[in-house]
Each structure stands twice: as structure tokens, then as C-alpha cells.
Length: 98
Image (cartoon, rainbow, N blue to C red; front, side):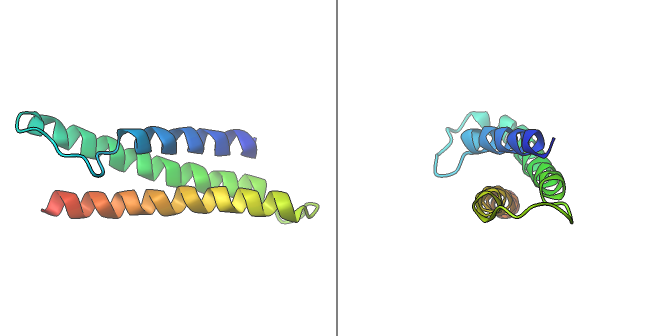
């Protein structure tokens, strides 16, 4: 079940990354959509953080056999998901404040 939740977190993260307006300029007309995109990206980042936390809880129980290669790979994927989601939240706050 933990692997399924981790896969769902990766899908939610990838969807938000693909829709993210980082580095692109916007035309003068679509300012009315900015608020909707900001809300979607914020909720997606928070959802990715929650799914990552649940996946980590399910994949790393207290008593289980050690598999260092698998554990490091899952830890790296979770770290990438969490760090980029946190960056997305910080970037959204800075871009909305401007």
C-alpha cells in the first residue's frame, strides 16, 4: 500500500511541476486565471506533502527487514518530492506577494 501511495504522490507532484509557470512570461490578457493556477499549485504541493508523509509512514514501519539500497532510493524520491513541494509553496508565496 505504501508503494501505491508513493506512486500517487509522484503523479500529483509531476502534474504540478508540468503546470508550474516557473520561468515563463505571461501575456497581458490572462491575469484572471492567475489566482486559479496559484490555488491549484498550492493545493497540489500540500497534497504531495501529505501523500509523501503517508507513504513514508507506510514504507518505513518500526520493525521490518533492512534493505539499504531500497531504503536509500525511496528516501531520495521522498526527499525530492518534499523539497520541490516546499520550494513550490515558498515560490508561490513570493510570487503572489509581488
